[in-house]
Image (cartoon, rainbow, N blue to C red; front, side):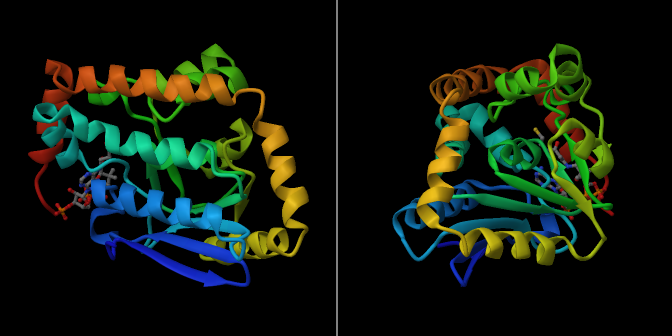
Length: 251
Ligand code: COA
């Protein structure tokens, strides 16, 4: 178990904290594995009724660790590690509540589409910069965003890939509510505790009913997106973007 994902349990709520604040909680292979293991355990554990997901420090997550993208150029199996996490979070049977402050970039935003309630504060900055990185959409975004937002809004978010704030995230339906800065984890925890106090069977059955229509298609899109993404990693466009990030002067 890595200490870059923290686990605490309180009154039926498992709180998973992405804990790599010096790197803005950029996700490594070990972190995806820790999240996947924790969710698999939580799915089987009747004492866990709800999961809360947040980041430590001032950010949610700056997305996949870019050094891992570079490593995956020579070892394409590495790009499949996030797929295991995405398959797990997208089929997790119990409610997941996310609390977002600071940056939520790439998979830091796309994983939110698999959460059931998402709260953010005014510091939140979302971005799906895949195309800007020479890459293509992942995390189910190429299916879920056009089907919920229509082609043009999805194109704006996924291809233009500009940063957007909590208010726009609420308008697009990515976030349920923008709350006072500094209170987002407590707010998410209150909602999680309310869900945990409800009948677990009714809650889980309702979640399954809400998701049943798109699940088969989503699972096949998650895999085809990763195939396309893996192929793009070795492109000149992606290599140039990774190089630009890695050569950025240190603060
Ligand atoms: N992978 C690896 N390291 C990352 C990272 C990522 N995705 N995002 C941030 N970091 C690291 C930085 O390298 C830096 O490390 P250092 O202190 O050792 O130099 C540290 O986190 C802080 O980031 P920094 O870039 O200095 O902060 P900033 O406030 O200037 O910019 C971001 C913040 C999030 C805008 C910028 O870090 C960024 O663009 N990150 C990449 C996001 C991304 O493209 N993710 C993948 C999408 S497909």
